[in-house]
Length: 177
Image (tube, rainbow, N blue to C red):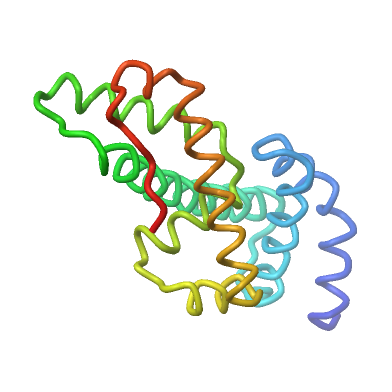
């Protein structure tokens, strides 16, 4: 039996169960991506797959899911720092309690933003990219990126206002950079 035929058999036998497992971890849409990546790994490592293959495939899917969550967590943390920086750019923080309150407000505000908005903010704040470089990463024009970033910052500002931070600290403002 050729590797291609063995892979087809493996795919037909295990795909529904791997997809169900991945979708249970991260939802249907992302689960489909994880499943696709799992079978890409399986194709590359056909000769290493043990019998029965399902536990190995589920392990690969689990590892891919964990890596996805680590990346998302890092992105979220980076966006939180940008939010905190934006929040405190116009306010003076005098004590630890105020700093903790600001961080909590920033995290809560970021939780309400889309993943796309968090990505825009982190490209600029954490990775230090300029508009031209960030636009290249996202596959759009510099003008489009700038508009999206401006809108993301406005949404962040509204989210911060919604969690009540600006009412507790009237000097706090979100500045456009």
